[in-house]
Image 1 (cartoon, chains in turn yellow, purple):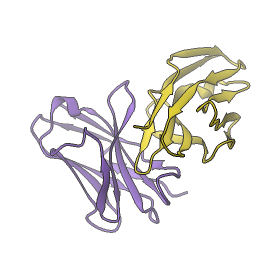
Image 2: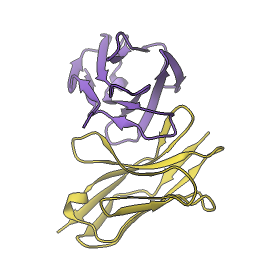
Image 3: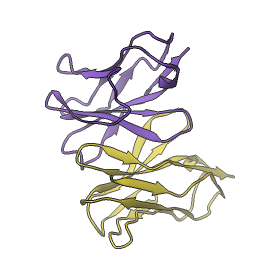
Image 4: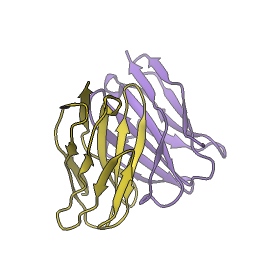
Length: 110
Length: 114
């Protein structure tokens, strides 16, 4: 079935460093792709999404491009802040449910 | 801004007891979901619900689990006889359009089975 594979964490960066979290997917159809973020003690919040190939989702300085040829949806941010420390989940939507990656914990140090 | 709400925020129960987790989805949404996240692990799909019936369920969603939309606003998850391994964070989500669009998640209910 459809699935999502994320790079394993944890990832620790200094403030203002460049962030990449890799995400690849396997799907039989044409899913929508999402990045969700989970701050400590909170639920899941949608960070960005892309619904078709070559779409770029962006929000709060984060970006990800839906690449059909490489089946990828890597998350990037040019300059991370301490407040970006959280767990990031890549996800794809099936016809009836959403499949999540394992999550990548990001810690940003001042 | 409309949001998904869940009650209680934390539920502690004894093994073998029944629990009902409650969710109020966003009012104009048509698709409803339950997920769980065992501490430190990935978010796992349990069940989706549309048009007053289950659309899909995972292998986790066995006969101990059931869902209901008892009125126009609530969406509940019942675990009939809880086991220790049911301890997890349970997230409700809802979506306005097809499942290909984003789902909005509630803050979760932490279930602890003793």
